[in-house]
Amino acid sequence: MNQVPLLSVHDLKTYFYLEQNRIAKAVDGVSFTVSPGETVAIVGESGSGKSITALSIMKLIEKPGKIVEGSIHLEEKVISSLSSKQMTKLRGNEIAMVFQEPMTALNPVYTVGNQITEMIRKHRKLDKKQAQIEAINLLKIVGISRAEDVVNDYPHQLSGGMRQRVMIAMAISCNPKLLIADEPTTALDVTIQAQILDLMVEMKERYHMALLLITHDLGIVSEYADRVVVMYGGQVVEEAPTKQLLRTTKHPYTKGLLESLPNLKEDVDRLGTIKGTVPPAYALPNGCRFYDRCPLAMEKCKEANPELYQVNTSHTVRCYLHEKEEIE
Ligand SMILES: Nc1ncnc2c1ncn2[C@@H]1O[C@H](COP(=O)(O)OP(=O)(O)OP(=O)(O)O)[C@@H](O)[C@H]1O
Ligand SMILES: [Mg+2]
Image (cartoon, rainbow, N blue to C red; front, side, top):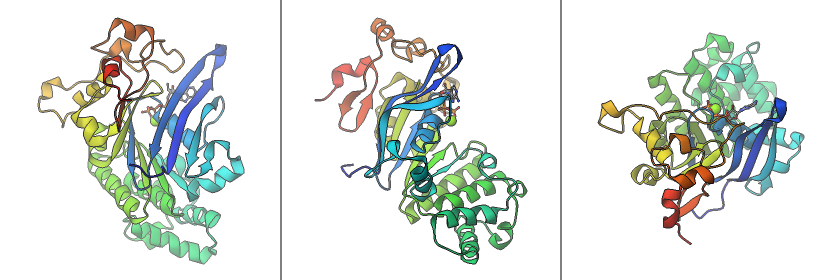
């Protein structure tokens, strides 16, 4: 896409300064963009840096964590240099985030209605009564029947799927340009998962939002994302439009993720996960971060971490096997 990006993350580094002078490089030089109206997925196993990337964009990194380098732009605004007051205004209003476990994001002592109206009134000039009407309206929009009753319920009275719908209602209440969803359905069973993802897509279209969808599930990616950013060890290892990524997968890690998917391959016997685990963010190797798990590793992979090679105008890969394919 040649449009001006809505979100632009450039060389983001978010580190955690731990005891014994250890530094956890949770996000280590990540760059990507999201265009208006686009759905971009960030995919990777547990510990690859997906959530810390999202929290960095929201400026919700807490000590001992810190954004140490890089820039984040939302249109012309430089998010990375906004004050916390300016950021509070932007959060919810221009970027909203939906988390994996809505119970941690919803306040248990307030009713659903209270929380939605508070959110609305923080950003929009509506009186209490108008905000309450708007809250009920939003609950209806996100598919909650009996919205007039649910608005008076407390979060614990709702099912997981309903809570996630409430979170989505809060997220869209101020018409943000970008919705970040961090594993929004992993705590839900499969049928409810699909309903929630479909609802997010419906909201995205209705409100002309872009969606940054964080998941470890390439099945979800293949169904919902326009473009995919694959993360490993705090870095982007492959990025391409979804179809291209699935059809001409380049990185051995992405191939491994695909092979461990039950539905995309017929041969169920090959179902399995990639051997080994993601290296801890405080003990990253000098060479390729996937080296010790890679079935195609070469000697030089151990010595230096490859750059991201641009193999065509929309596909990048961090792997020496594709170094020679690089275009100018
Ligand atoms: N508060 C913290 N202190 C130290 N290290 C942290 C902290 N938060 C995250 N990390 C480290 O940063 C790395 C990336 O974490 P992150 O939560 O972004 O992973 P993730 O890709 O979202 O994984 P998951 O799929 O499990 O949610 C991990 O190695 C993690 O241990
Ligand atoms: Mg996470």
